[in-house]
Length: 114
Image (cartoon, rainbow, N blue to C red; front, side, top):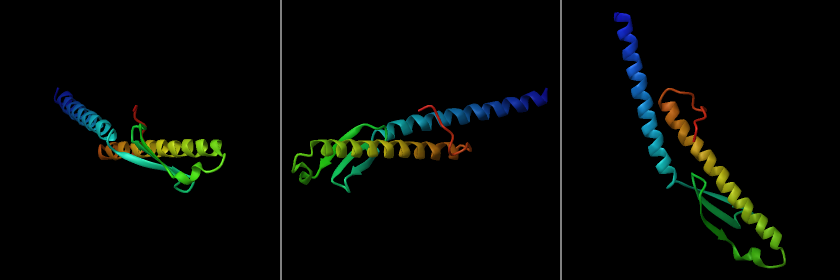
C-alpha cells in the first residue's frame, strides 16, 4: 500500500511539471509574436523583418536595386530576404523551445508540436 502512495506522489510531480511546461510554452508562444529576426539578401540590399512565428513585419529595399531592367533579380532578392527571415524565425523558435525543454530536464532537441 505504501508503495502505491509513492507512485502517486511521483505522478503528482509529473503532472505538475507537465502543467508548468504547458504554461511556459503558452507564454513563449505569446512572446514569439513579439520577438523579431532580420533576414537579408544581396549583401544587405534587401532586408526583411519577421516575428519568430514567421509573420513578415517589414521590408527594407535599397533603391539602387531598382535601376535597370532586372525586375526578376529584384523579385528574387525580395523572396530570398523573406525566406532568410522565415528560416531565422524558425531557428529562433526552436532555440527558445529548446531552452524550455532543457530547463524541464528533457532533451534540448526534442521536437514539440508547435
